[in-house]
Image (cartoon, rainbow, N blue to C red):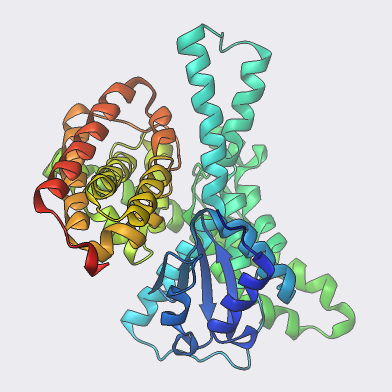
Length: 456
């Protein structure tokens, strides 16, 4: 394996996306560098695709995404270090092209905002989810008591990110919108303070300045912070600029915090709470109408969502389901079987290939997908060959339908691949069966449909 010169790679990427002056913001998820560019047309997509370290490019949802697989973190750090990006962002307000108002552009901006917020938080849920899985295994498999101090402490660590989700979401959203992350956190964190939570048992009418408000449970919620931070991004500069410079640093934060806190009590947080509840009820309705086939649809379309970089938008749905229902029987099962279908199709390609080099690349991609990173297999193997990609979609649908029939349930967030099986806990056997089915269908269809290696 050739060792990557990350400093050189970082320089190549930034130059090919149009130079540092064309970069508004840079973030990353598990496998992708996610650029927000001043002008996407300045990026040399074909040249970027030809780089050995790049698996593919996705231009969608106002983001220019470069798929680099497991090299994403060191590459991101090299870019940020070389170009002195402050927290992964570059201010280019004078040169940013304002998009004309339209429903399409508005939807794209909303999706970009939610996606850009979630990609920074998802790794935390994966890590903490594995802690909870390990505790479940220790309790069910080895009889470790849930009342022990060790179990209690580790459980607190594993559940901390989920419990304090409004805090992490507010901080992440503020970074995305380039507003003060600490103001964003302070303006939302009081909603999970013990004093506020205690108001639920208040015997009288809960009111602020004589105006009545409902006390809702905001722990483990996402959308209250999303809405609150967006409002902050719109009012922070006008409020600060209203005051003379000599008192700006005193009264600016004060007015922002008070205004947002009051807004959160009466409007922003309740609206966000009910949006999350609506999503859960909508998913439950879809499952009731479509039954097990709903999971099959997710399994079949996940690969397509990865192609357009929209798969991370399902994270709020998974979080809402786990928070309100206690498990996710819709998204994560579909994502996992899709992953196993990709492994099956890619392995079939490796075994059928007559070219030694391509066979080795395919085997490596299949292993990488099995461990949870399927972009190299998708972009490097399946999509160029077309028929194996279609076979993976079919495998995802059949495997997802089986997962739906067997009642698989994910109790925590997790990365895809073999590691994700652990979050299914008491339904892990059912999930393994569904994964094997997805793998077998995709493998068999790829073998049956065959493919032309020269089209790659």
